[in-house]
Each structure stands twice: as structure tokens, then as C-alpha cells.
View 1 (spheres, rainbow, N blue to C red):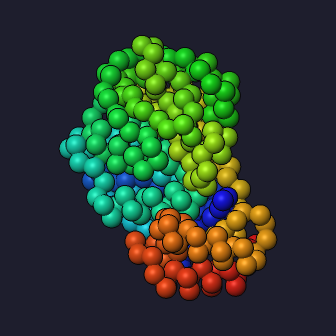
View 2: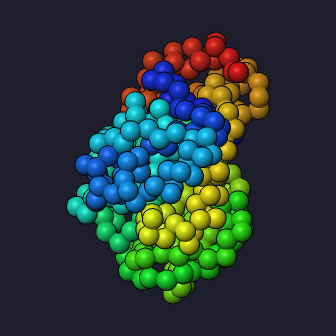
Length: 286
């Protein structure tokens, strides 16, 4: 079953990932290890912010908590360097994140050598887990072709982590020691989506410390994150038509408690989700 989804439905529509409306979300300083590491304001992301805005994207103010309401307003969520407290996302944050990815959100995880439980809580529902600190510095080879790696031969890093991935993900690069360093999950890798994941093992590679060495990758990442087509929540089957089969598709997803079928994004699967879907179906697709 193929499902095309664009929104947080009744709570609000996920921002379109077209380059002109691509909105990047992130945590504020309360959840990031240092002030310079806040994507929207930090001194360590000046160049990356320039790439985002130069490509027509915008930056949302950082948030202290992942909620359905916050995620409904962004197309991309960027983790940066999480606080060094070894604390994962709360259950409610994980539920909101999972529903958002199921609704077409693009997640960019920049792992590092600490708060591995935090990064694991961002990706374990996608099958990306078993984070291990490597703490190596160097440059590793790109091993698979993908739009993210176009024109990229190596990825430079400064203290990194590695992780395991599911069959629906693609390893993009290893570190110099042969450990997995970067991976992607999107339709090209066999991931059903419609959300997407890009993960690297070191947040420094996209900061002022190393972004010049990784500039082509960073440019590709911004373009990739913002090139998702506009898609329609009510077209559950993803065939471009709204018909009875979309209702049957939604009913099946609801029965399986698929995050997609939590149309209201309140963590419950109930009659209000059916009413929410019905309303969106009646509104049609642009």
C-alpha cells in the first residue's frame, strides 16, 4: 500500500517541502549542548543557515519540546548536538515525531559521541539503532551513489558515532576505520515513507568547524531536504485520485494503528480521526 501524506491533518498542515516553502525546525538552547549549536541562531551554523535561506528555505524558531503543533509547522527537523544528559525523547515527543515522519516530514539526525540514547530515540522507530561512540577524527569514503552524495568523494568528521540500519536504508559513507558513518532512508532506498531520514555520525561536519570540507554534501542535503513534492493526505493510496479505495486504505491503516491514521495527531485512534479524514477528503487535493 502506497500512502501520500502532506499533513498533520486537523492540527495543521505540515509545511510543504517545496524549496520556496521549506521550513527547518530544531531545538532551542535548552535541548542543545551549547548555544552555538542552535540551528536557528547559533554561531556554528552560519554557513548552513546561508545555504538554507539561499535555497529559498526558512528557519523556524527553536523549540524546547517536540509537539505535534510545532512539527506541523516545519518540513525538516534538524537535531544538532543534543544536550549531554543521556536522556532520550519523552514518550509523547517520540509519538509526535513518529506521526510527523509518517506524515511526510524529513528528519536530519546529526549524531555524536554522547547522548546516544537521545539519538536512538529519534530513529529507533525507523530501525536505526545501536549507536556506538567511535571518537575518531578524519575523512571517510562515500560508498554508495545517491543525490546526497553527488560530487562527494569523502565526508570529513571530528569525533563520530556509528549505528545500525534496516534493509530499507542505504549506507552512504563509512568512517576511515570502516564503520558506518552516514545513511539515508527515502523512496530511492526502498523506504515506504513518505517521510525521509538522513543521518550522519558527527554534528561537527555541518558546523563552521568542517562545513567547508563538506560543502558539496551540505548543499546537496539542503536541496534534498526541500525537494519533496506536494502530496495529499486524503489520497491514502497515492494514485492521484480520491475515491472509495482511499477510505478503505485509511480504514486499514486505522485498524493497524498506523501513525498516518492518527489524523488529529493526538496519540489516539478514534472516531474523530475518521471525521478528520472525511473533512480532508471533502476538501480535495490541490
